[in-house]
Figure 1 (cartoon, one colour):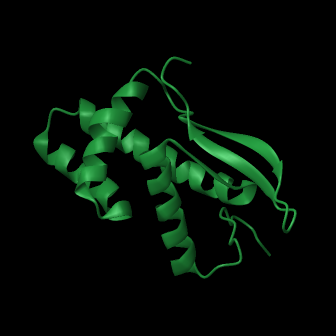
Figure 2 (cartoon, rainbow, N blue to C red):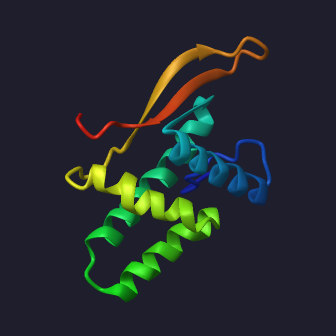
Amino acid sequence: MRHRVKTNKLNRSASHRKAMLNNMARSVFESGSIITTTAKAKEVRPLVENIITKAKKANTTSSPEERVALNREINKHFNDRKLVQKIVHEIAPKYQNRDGGYTRILKIGNRRGDGAELSILQLIPEKE
């Protein structure tokens, strides 16, 4: 039975799934959007939104200890301090007045080889 099971396994082991989702989240933050299957996009979306929320808190907090702790929580997904600084100082301020929904999934059709449904996962521009 699958009671209270929230994640889709995506036919991967736990470590492979975690690494894949972290890599996809990194790509979203570096380029702004990625093309992937709809199932993978739906799985990586909560991770991306959670990271942006933590970055927003790191921007607004006055306590240096809390700011460092939030930066470290973001860094555990990427192990790249420059990317963390980009997320905290460039991406998160764009969504300061937004209460969630920082990403969108646009379905673009099926993949030619295996017929898998493809989607674009992108960060929503700040003016919407």
